[in-house]
Length: 100
Image 1 (cartoon, rainbow, N blue to C red):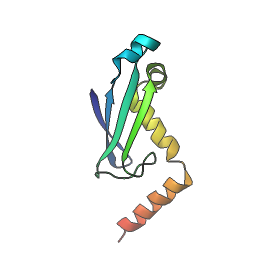
Image 2 (cartoon, rainbow, N blue to C red):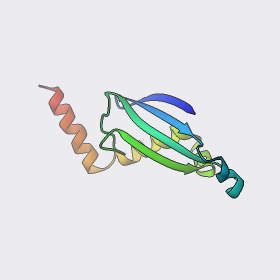
Image 3 (spheres, one colour):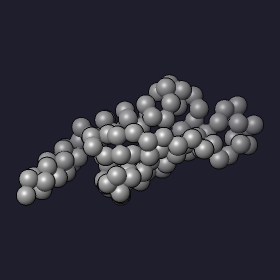
Image 4 (cartoon, helix red, strand yellow):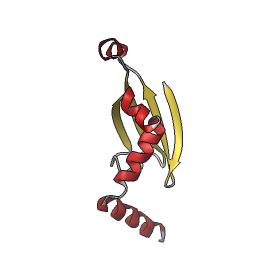
């Protein structure tokens, strides 16, 4: 299992990447990867991809390679979803709360 941490907009995020089904490669010729995304600081902080701070993602090896790895994939996913109106409202509300 590969574990990586990175910071995104002030949230520390942990990625755990594993290849749990070795037989997948035997059948399809490539691996299926499981990416567990967790906000760790603040713990369970909401993310644009998850209200609970946890998201499970399954990606085939070719898809993962297109993005240049799990970190790039998750970062692009976060940035894409952060453009939603709902996430922008949530960020604005959190900023207002910090003022008091």
